[in-house]
Image 1 (tube, rainbow, N blue to C red):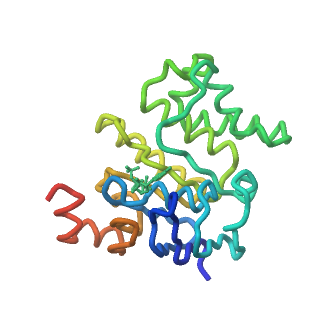
Image 2 (image 1 turned 180 degrees about the vertical axis):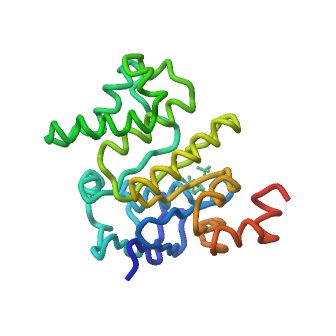
Image 3 (image 1 turned 90 degrees about the horizontal axis):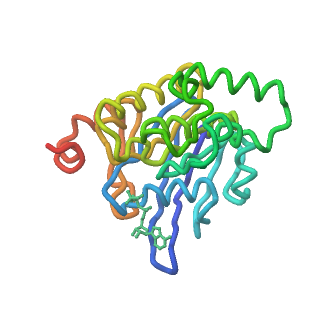
Length: 237
Ligand code: ATP
């Protein structure tokens, strides 16, 4: 069995099927990307993994244990953290307090303080803005903040939903670099959902292409970057 396996997931919204038997799996320490058009089911796959939307069929296994019936709030203590699409920061709270919200279920004060330090070392832009309200940050900084907040839960597996959405190319590059660093230096496995297929395939080892609720194609990211179908449909030729 692999480190993470979702087997044959099906999900419906009010009887309308959104996923038809999606399977994904990977080993510890990998970055895998999930690409596909609008409405293909990428966010739904992440919601099914975190239990925010229950699959009607299928199984999810993480570190050798079945997790598809575990309540979403319990998955955090198993080491799974999700950063949803849309950068939901608490706009009227400081950057520091936003980060600490990620640790609100933890009681280990000393470890929380050292995690905060480590995260601020990784995101110097956040350190410079520690007392500023989160609502005043740029889009890229807010993305760093929500990723930093997720890291405060000490995840082993990070699910990122469209981290590059609406960001300028240079900022996308910063975010991509940060995702790679977090993966390499902290050993966090990542499932990366992206509309920016090129970025996602560049930083991941393996990719899945979702097409109307099914995995249309999967393979090593380097091969997908070269694949004619992927190039035509998802990489702008
Ligand atoms: P996007 O990039 O636009 O977020 P996506 O690939 O993440 O697209 P999903 O958001 O997972 O796609 O949507 C998959 C399908 O499920 C779509 O047909 C969508 O309309 C439908 N869907 C998603 N969320 C809901 C919901 N809360 N209620 C009803 N249908 C939904």
